[in-house]
Length: 450
Image (tube, rainbow, N blue to C red):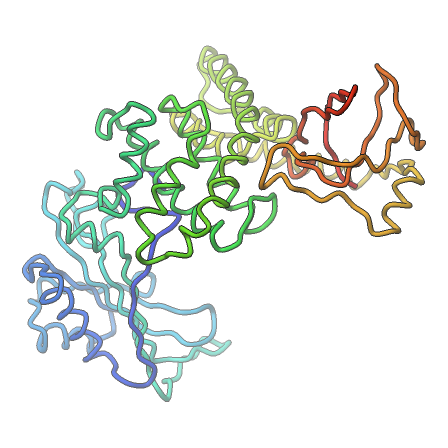
C-alpha cells in the first residue's frame, strides 16, 4: 500500500514512552492526553478513544478523570484492542487515541465510524497496558509489576500538527517530493498515477538511506533482499514519471539534509550510501527495461483476447529468465486493473525446484579451481562501490582445462582477484560487460559463482 494511501510507509519513526512497574493506566492516560491537548494543541472535541471491551478501568479513567464524553469512547474486542508479544508471554488491553479529521476525509460508507479504514478517524497513539502473562494453555495471570508501552508514529502526528492532508506533505518528506518534481518535471497533484510514483520514491529514498546507513547492503537474501526490493520498486515507479536515468541517489541526497540535525552519522556516510544506490540503479536498469517491455507487450495481447489474468507461466518466465521481480509485476498488473495467476506461478516455481532436486549433474571442476579453493583464494566483489576496477587474472580455463592464454574467438572462463561483476543468483541474471587491457578485449557474456 506504500504510495497508494496517505499514511503507509516502509520507513517511519516511532515515538513512545514506557513505564516498568512505575505509573500505570491512570498516569499513562493522563500523560498522553496532556501532551496531545496542552503540548500539541489538538482540539479536545475532535479526539476520540477506543478501549478493550472488558477494560472498564480504562473506560472510567477516560470518562470520569479526563472528561471524554461517553459518545466519544468506543469498545472493541481482542483483535483491535488487545496486545500480545505472541501466543504466550506478557500481554494486555490497549487504548487508542484517534482524531476526527472531518467529513471531507470520510469514505462513502453510510456506517463510516471509528474503526473504518478511511482517513477520517486517524489513529494517533496506542497505549498498551501490559498487565497479564499468558501461558501455553491460554490462561492469563496478573503480572507482579504491570507496565506501560506506547507507540505513536512521528510522521502521522506531524501531519496533524502541520495541518496537511497526508504524511507525505510534512516537512520531513515534501522536500524529497520537490526534488522528484524537479527531476521529472511533474507536479504533485497533476494525476493520481504521478502522485503514487512520487510518494513511493520519497518513502523508498528514506528507507534505502537508513538501511544502508545501518550497514545493510543490497543482496538476494534476508534484509539485503528487502533493501534491493525497495530500491527496485522506486526505480520502476520512476519510469512511470519519465525518469529513465539513475535518479534515486539524487532524491536520497535530500534525506541527508533533512535528517542531519538528528542523524549526523547518516550525512557522514552520504557518499557511500549514494554510490551503493547508484550502482544498484545502473545494474537493474537494463533488467527493468527489458522486463517491462516484455510484460507490457504480453499485457496488450492478453487484453486483446478479452482476458484479465496474467498466466503464472509468464510471471515465472519473467522472474526466472530475466530476473524480473514478482513485486514489480504485481505493481504493474495492479495499475492495469488486471490480476495474477499466483498459483500458476507457484506451481512453475515448484516444478523448477523438483527438477533441480531430481537431476544431479556431476560437472567437471577444473583442477585450477580446486587449487585456488584449497589455497583460500577467491575473487573479491567490489561492485557495491564501483562499476569498474583494476584486476589481475588468476586463472583462464578452456573446456575444463587451465590454459595460459586464449586466442581471438575462443570461449573461456576467467577468474580475477577483484571483480565488479555480480554473479547470477536468486533469479537475477549474471552481469555482462568487458575486460580490457593492453592488446586485450574480453566480452563477458555471463557471471556465475561456484
